[in-house]
Image (cartoon, rainbow, N blue to C red):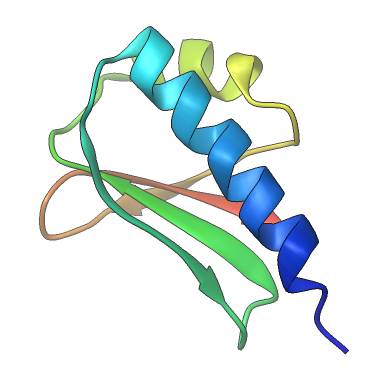
Length: 78
């Protein structure tokens, strides 16, 4: 059974980090049930140093997930 309260709390923490570090630039932040992960896509593209810096700020481990149609993507496996 999926614990949506925990997922929503983690999404709020992710949103807070992104807004603090980069400003309001979230294109999509959603739970992907198939992957059992939260997926984040930004509204612009980051270089490698910025990706590494941002990944270090999140409360749970984040992986670079490539480039989406709008910007850089990250995945947070639960």
